Amino acid sequence: MGPETQRDSVPSIASPVRAAALLSAALLLLTACGGGADDSAAKSAGGEGYPVTLRNCGRTVSVAAAPHHAVSVDQGSTEILLSLGLADRLAATATWTDPVMKGLGKANAKVPRLSENRPSSEKVLDQEPDFVSASFESTLAKGGVAPREQFEELGVPTYVSPADCTGKDNSGGGDGARTEALTMDSVYGEVRDLAAVFGVQQRGDELVARLRERVKKATDGIDASDATLLYWFSDSKAPYLAGCCGAPGVITRELGAKNVFDDTHEEWPQISWETVADRNPDVLVIGDLTRKAQTAESAAKKIEFLESNPATKNMDAVKHKRYVLLSGQAMNPSIRTVEGLEQVAAGLRTFGLAG
Image (cartoon, rainbow, N blue to C red):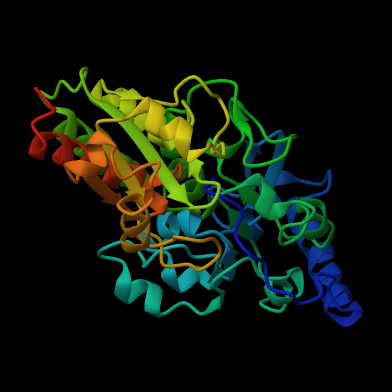
């Protein structure tokens, strides 16, 4: 993910009354799931095709019936659900770095927003959710909204994007490190998983098909093997720059280009500007964020810094203003990574760096 988002300062422990109410709901949910009883009764209670059981980030997630009051606590997950036409099934959303994806504004406006940053578990549980989804393991962990166990003990199924756990080690500090290069298959898998949970599998297949077609169109005939790129997510004092193998890695590999920091497997390492200047990339891919969690969040602030800072103002990309501006979500593993691929491809063509 991009650098850690801020979190609301509301206490994170659910009230006893709320917890008791949800625990009662949990017992009903477990009864519906069968608890060793006849599966046909569970399917009848949950509807055709239920229960749905998935393996997700090392856990087994079982959903007894299609959610109708879900909470999505990361923007990437929210935009998948909105793209699947599920605004009417969302009780609330939270944690936003950018304006909502183009084409989803009307649907998003129908869904209450708990907070721009990570909400407390109390705020989430106040919605009485029947499903909670997130884009990052750290969101549903200690120090985030709440550990997945807390929701599961109350009978609320949880789901985390596989793009943040497959081939990735989140046990250390920062934003984790990739043990394997991310591919779009993880994102497509998330789309299909969520479509299955909500009982809209056909919509999921159609969304994946559209995303695949956009990737094919963006990369058709392009050869950027001579171009070097740097991805800057946020912070001017100790910048968070993309390592080899997250969402920026997907973009770079699809275009045949080179990330100047592909020698680190950290998701978003903090690297000095002197080292950046020494690598001297051809193009700077800049996160244009609307949140206010770090310094230099917007692209305008980033460019102002680059063009005034002694360590960076003489870089080739800065002198020639070879900037590509991306939303934060396009730089995270999400359906908007495709948007990022399209924009970087267009930029390379404009700069004459793509064959």
